[in-house]
Length: 241
Length: 232
Image 1 (spheres, each protein chain N blue to C red):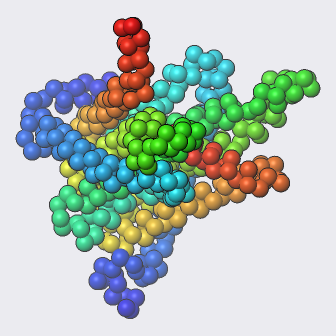
Image 2 (cartoon, rainbow over the protein chains, first blue to last red):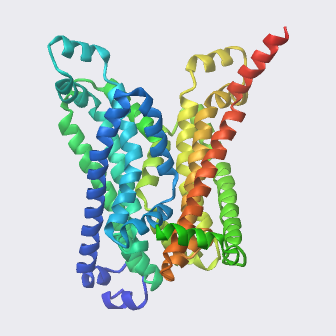
Image 3 (tube, rainbow over the protein chains, first blue to last red):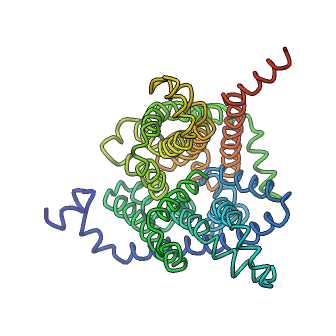
């Protein structure tokens, strides 16, 4: 089919659309990445102290986990709508909502990772004269990294997918194109934006996997099957959260 | 807060609750969609997960499906289905999207639940001469119940959320109150609709937590055991 006719015939796949609306697509992708990156970054910054507090004072763990689970239950459209009176129709609504969702996943995985640090490793570090801060950053965090990164990957992928709902207030990245395409019955726009969204999620997941491999070289070294099986189990656990 | 009082006023206005755009009708649509789609997805996913878990095959599929479900935006699938060839069949696209997004949590949790059953117990059951079906019904399913129920609960919450999004793609349900509110730039209506949806989601979650506690066969067994012990 010729390039020009696919816009007129409203085909699902249309190279002409991608060529002529390149700028629009780039802007949407950049907005999508920006919203996701900001939300996940703020999520990590908030989740980390929350998880440490919940670990330090056992009594806090229940309420912290309970509150984040309640937030996670609220559907995205409702969450964004409830935040509108607070911020007006601004990007802050979407980012705040996404941060609240990411918190549930991140806090759980950070806590699980820290709980999985072998007591002997802690004892050894203390015996070597490590203070609490050095113990945390030099021993516990590196050992908790696989679980932490698994949480970060899940949070990032679901944030990328949920960002599309931000279209309801005009800040949904690729979601804006999906909503616009739905309203004008423009098939190529909807399909292109949807596919780009999934591609973005897969790329982010792979990038984080790569970072995880680079940060934890010891998990690969000379383990073979046992290591793989352990990792598969860790992933199953992270999924079941 | 001005918004709070205006939202309250919106909720307290009787005319907002009646009629085809009223809360009761939208709530009915929402509950019907949720219940129907949850039943369909359970009927599709649970038997598959139980058989896969029993035989120990297809683990990668069951786990990866949940990951894939997370990466695909619900909103995109809803719009794609509405614009697709199924779009002319009323609420069929919505139902399909709801079922599609309920299946991953069901399948993954049920599969993991079946796999985490102590292999020694399964061996013992086989040693007692139980058939495959008996092992599933009397040993694996009761022990896998907590994760199975967790899967159903997350699927239910997922369906409530997806049904809300369906409004954005032209479907019915409580989400319509929110989208209509945005169109009318009526913040009070937007917040009122969002509150109703949030309360519904939390109620559904709560009801399923309660059901899970009441129906757990292992707990029931323990309770029966305690009663029997007292009787003696």
